[in-house]
Image (cartoon, rainbow, N blue to C red; front, side, top):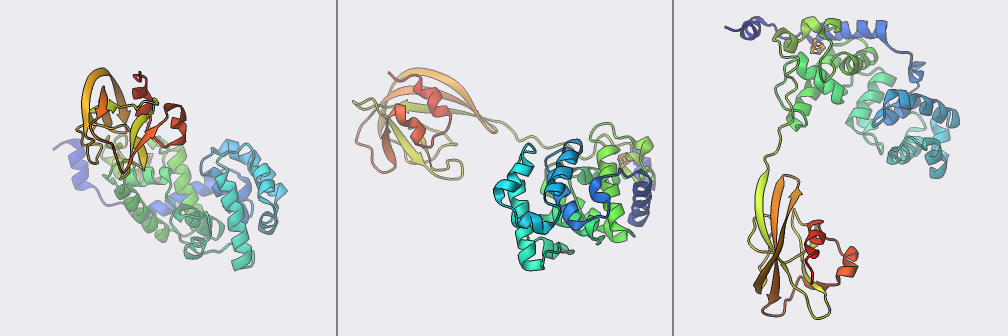
Length: 349
Ligand code: SF4
């Protein structure tokens, strides 16, 4: 029996109550003084969560201070124009966040009398608030037993409970939400517990080289006990690359226009393609065309498909109908087309 197998056999399942107590104690001792922690105004917590969605903490702090100075209450934000809100957000990027925050504030004033709701169900009815933000506002602002899972939480719980699913899979996120729910249900102070879980996930249980020696839940962690802290969560499974060969036909009329076909379907997006030969990637009825000389070849990659295109001159045997159209190469920008088309047009006469 290996060391890891021995540990697996003798290991006890982690106790959610014990983990929760340790993380709450850790947070009480190590929490950083952040402006929205000063009184936990639900409006401030909401603004901070939206700002932190795609932006680092150090960048967010000055923007947060300026934003809540400019719009000190939710009513002030709801009463501002979109332009005023975007101006205050200027420089933070991802401006859709600011628009949704304002839309959410207007909704809260209209439907909840200006008080940010305290339950996940109500929060989820507000535009721009998803499962994570609803859990964050309910637990951090209102101290409700609501779970939250972001990337850091998914990583730490997958190590604590040795969740075997790969990163980026719905199975991992479902298991993480389930474990996060068990943990928050077992805690005394959801506000402290959830923030402790997120901060230990971000600062201690880092993606590479987790600092297990400094970790407050090291004694509860199955990944550490089995020597697998560096292995979990399992990396993303890379999709297999497929090699394809496709024959393209460059067919022109007397005016120099190119024959193209509008194709639809899950891979096509109603775009205009060049007539093509046998392939499993492209579908549709083949064109009655005669293959001429080989003009050249080129390689092109589409997500997991590596395609070798062979470009042939061609001539139509009968007048094409239906989805076919003659397109002026100078006006190609007016029709939706995939990027390989331009590569093939370099062989136009
Ligand atoms: S012991 Fe290590 S792997 Fe386990 S939760 Fe703590 S930092 Fe992460």
